[in-house]
Length: 139
Image 1 (cartoon, rainbow, N blue to C red):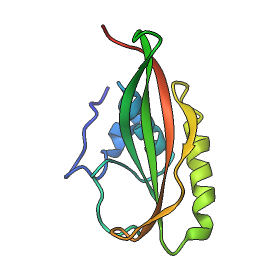
Image 2: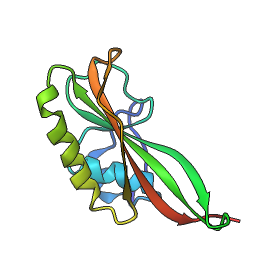
Image 3: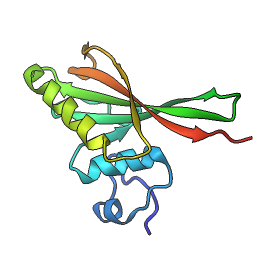
Image 4: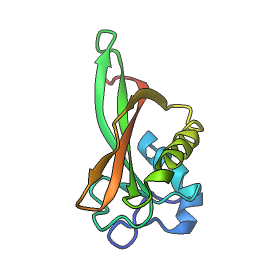
């Protein structure tokens, strides 16, 4: 099995590794699943240039304890960037991403989605969809 590594300053994975890599974390599972489906996927802080095509940023956003700190959940922000001149196609793109993530059994949508906002730095609309993974907490 391949290792989970980036190529050339972190832009893309070697295409042969995408199909041969076994994800070891849920973050890697999300990332690889979306890449295999043809989505342009990045980790937080990896892409900073102008948004010319839609893309997704996958970011872990914390672990939360519950049930006496024995169980809890980890949250993942699925941040979607969409070109500023294509507002009319953004909702469909988001729904396609949400449909794709239904294939990952460990993930559950929280129902929290941010409104579309303009990120003038990359000239894109952006929104975030929050997911959670229930897990046993380490002691």
